[in-house]
Length: 441
Image (cartoon, rainbow, N blue to C red):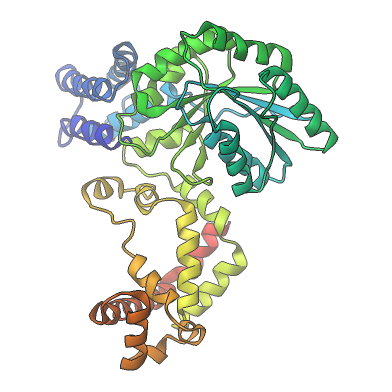
């Protein structure tokens, strides 16, 4: 989402590179370009001006160190400004209560049912017993959608399709949770228009009667500045506790993510980064600022890796790499784990120094799909012993026929796999164990 903003900020900061010192003239030109980049990204002009005025004042202040290059100094100041703009620190979610209650609110089409499922999966993974409650009594198929989501993630869903009283459904859902010892209740409500007084009153009554531990406003990041205006309207009626940004994997300009915290004075607590139930991240302002400036986000990368890898698996893989014994079963397992971490482009963007390269490169998310298809066409013996396929035309022909991939492409993919094995063996001898160990620490 922030690719264009990142590129424009980089261009703005280029004006200071090679300069010996910061002056009124060159810093004025730089902050003007930074402000223009922020406004172009849909950040409100007053908010953008506030950030750039702060950057300019600090850059010209007495605390400037002459040993630091001007470009580096201003980059650090912009990072600080963006971090402060988005809330400075991670905001905690209040889960007090027996059960704890999270009330979801937002506009129609903001993605509440999907996000409710992601949040349920997130807390289920933390060991909590979660119940989803379907309180959207207006939209056709809303209840069945939430039930499908619940089945997909293995979380119970309370629904009463015949009941047309959202408050009554919510209260009975909470009673159900108490009876069945659920620790957390997530209530999915109907999407509403801010101008719809009856619908707004319904969500206000839900909050007043249920006394939720947390009320989260779900907003589609693709809607730009409209998201900020809507958040203001909802906050005036609900006084919600935090904001959830969905569809942050889209190609919108992203200014709402930067502005919303400043305008409504409520923290962003979660972000949705994709369509999978695992595509949910806790929002860290400092990490997001680093990623926007192309500085990477190693901490989030490691956290994602820790969710799908354990130390025993890492050690086993490292041992097989050293002995050049990586087989197709290992490849499939490793590929599935990487997929659960997120898109390749997103993961590469978290590596410091890779931000610009990722923006410029055409990252093919399906580059390994042909090899994956070939593996599924192999026998169990062939998967565990890749050497059986070396120059064995009959086996390769059978795999080509079974996968629907031309024989020449099969041979090419097998050569690529063999080359990958040898390359990874060399890497493992050059410190793979230490790298994996650092990942697990």
